[in-house]
Image (cartoon, rainbow, N blue to C red; front, side):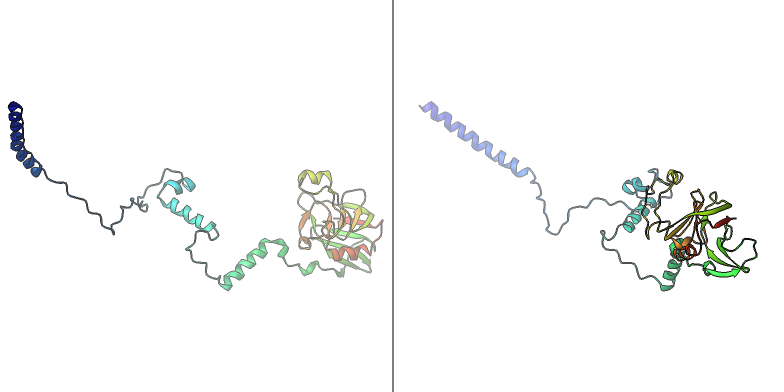
Length: 268
């Protein structure tokens, strides 16, 4: 019993001797400095790519690929094009200022020049009574293809002259025919040769204002050629058809009432 008490006392004394050394060791170790976080401090931003300033060509090929992965002028130019092409989805872009009135007038004139439907009808193609010095007798139709005129000989050195549209280069022709039939608001069935060139055309179209044969048609012999009206009056005075002679609707109605089946037609 005394032996056990002695051993316990010795163990306690040894722990008292070791404790100061352990405390000194703890005091000697430097404590880590606590990190201080300020509420106003922002997280570091990723580095932004800067504008391209090197005078060298990109090897990305330009266009959309360079726009996605490059920093060069092509990327900037392509991005500008994308902004310009979008209606208003990007936002933040000022609307274009109103166009200068003089510049607007210039654009309108350019549009009129590019759109044949806006072309002014030349007064020289209006129906008019003119002198006739040819040898054909009254009632004959004379077609002057190069000058885009059709004459109905009246006799006494006079003729009614109308403006016409004629065949395109390669589709003009010359010869003597007779009017073999007359039709009001004729139907139109494009011939096979025309369908081969224009497969988009309808196979048949009923007569009416939208029909390209117009208000009247006078068929020339057994050929596919006709003297007919047109729903495109701006084409009068031009080489436009596939060989037919086209007139304004008001003119072809007038001519239709003046000639009969069997009338002679001379095409020059």
